[in-house]
Each structure stands twice: as structure tokens, then as C-alpha cells.
Length: 249
View 1 (tube, one colour):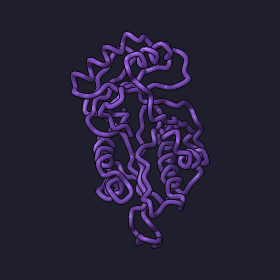
View 2 (tube, helix red, strand yellow):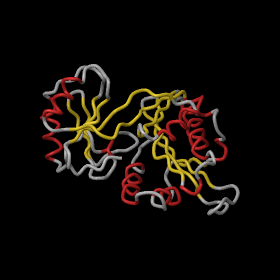
View 3 (tube, one colour):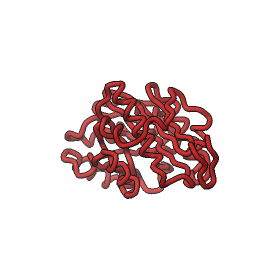
View 4 (spheres, one colour):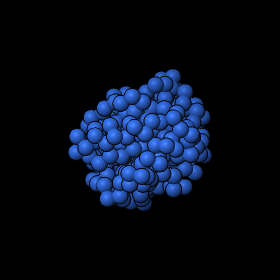
């Protein structure tokens, strides 16, 4: 939640409820604070909180994790279905920092207009982009990474921002979020450089571990992240009723 602060945040015993009217699933779903056994009785309280806020109920739960069987069966009985499996990957920050050229990346404590424009440019959903920029700008302890072209490439001039990302620091970890490379500049290793720069900053701050989240079916991105040191940790899915107006990203 630290990297993508929602409009509102409520807490129930063992749960955080993110309440947001944007498009980002992590900012508009309920998440357990531990992977132990879950009492399905909490579901009614979660539903009441989302209904009071005028949002459909969405839960973000790990799969193949003991302790969630009764809750997921209750969800199925109430008409919820799982969707959008997302892989959580973790890494040693120093390892990631050593797998790129962090000197080619500019880090800023605040996102500039050029950084934000990448999300709103060609090849990306502008509505989702605006929602993500809005949330990422709220992060309290973060760096915003930008990589500008050092030489002209097809479709771009020297100085153009080709790729961006952000790293948020909390609880001794760095979370990597908002990785975007403009479509015409993909394949040049820019994402690797961004992650190396942010991981080097994590090491400087004493955050020894980093994590990120990526759609489980995005094998190209998962392969890239694995090459710089990230390993699979667990997969979560979003549970919601079919037809609910929850645009999960």
C-alpha cells in the first residue's frame, strides 16, 4: 500500500482494505496481513466496508497457500471467481544493483512531467496511466527513475525519456512499481538499467531485499526480472463477482 496509496484505507483484524475508485487492483482490494488460517466470517465485514464506499468487493489472495481453503470455498459459494493471477518476485537488492548500469538513470524524489508522460503516451491505456500516476505520486518514501536516450534511436532523439519506474521503501524492503518502457524503445535493456539504479539506492538506504509484482502470464517480463536476480515467491489472484465494475491492473 505504501507505493500505491488508495483514496482510503481501512483495517479489520488481520486485513487491510484498500478503497479507491481508480483502475489499479492493488489499490481497490482487500488483502490479508498474513498467510495463516483465515476466518471466512470476516467476508461479510469486508463486503460491508466496500458497499459503504460504493465499490464492488474485491479480495487479493494467494493461491496454493494452506489456511485459505475455507475462505475461498465461501467466496465460490457467494458467486466470486478468481482472475488475473499475479506473480510476486523477490530479490537481493545488491544482486539486482550489479546487473545493470545505474549511472545511466536519473533518480528523483518526485515524479516530473516527463516521467508522467510516459504512462500517458502511445502504447498505454491513458485512463489506467492517469490512475497509476495519481497513486504513485502519493508514495511517501520513494524514488522515481527516468532513463533518457544518450544517443538517437529509431523514433527518438537524444534526451527523450525512454523508460521510467519507481521504487518505494518500507519495512526494510524496496518495492519496484510502475515499470514502463515506451514501445518503440523496448529491447535495449532499459528496464534492467532502471532496476539496477533503484536497487543501488535500496542498498544505500539499507533495504537489502526488493520485490515486484507482475502478471503471471507475462512470461517475457518474468524472464527479464529473473535475469537480474528476482525469483518467484508466490502467486495471488483477485476474487470478485462477475460483472463487477472493478478494472484490475
